[in-house]
Structures are given as structure tokens and as C-alpha cells.
Length: 98
Image (cartoon, rainbow, N blue to C red; front, side, top):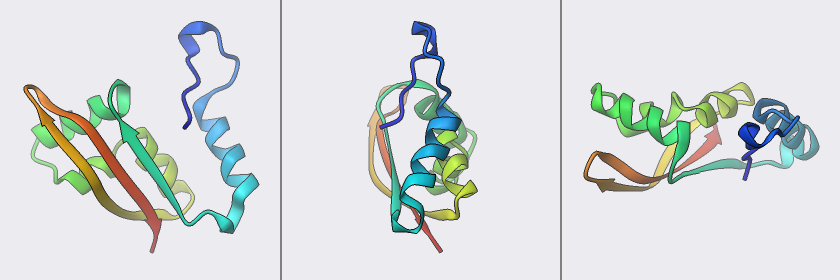
């Protein structure tokens, strides 16, 4: 899980952390899983769905989906999508290489 908490003064940035993990695992990484219960990923996902995007397209547009695509993980499977009152409250997306 990458969660850098910049509001707490973390000097690390999520994009750098993501790149470091991918550099470490390289081609051994077979998939990337996003699991969103709060925050920007879930917010962007819900906004995209509310604007008519499919669940898979919405997942691709999240921060995690964009980082995954930078490393060739562009196939998306929605593993979990629990609806709440104002959109989805839990979403899990699995990103794999073509």
C-alpha cells in the first residue's frame, strides 16, 4: 500500500514511492491492485462514474490507474465495487499488463 500522508510532513511523494517499488520488482510484478475506501482515488473514481464513465474507465483515470499505466498495466478488472449513498464506498481494481 502506498499512502505517504503529506499532511503529516512526509518528505516522500507517492509517485516516487510507486516508481521505487516498480524498479525493485521490475518484470516480476504481475499486477497492481488499487483498494480505495477514502481519498482522492475513490473521489475521482466516483466523479468519473457520475459523469457516465464505465467502472473500468473510471479506475484507469485514478491516480493509481495512471501510475499503473506508466508501467504497462492497462488491463483493468473491477474486483469489488460496493455502492454507498453518494457513490461507491469501496472499490478494488486489479491492473494487469496486456
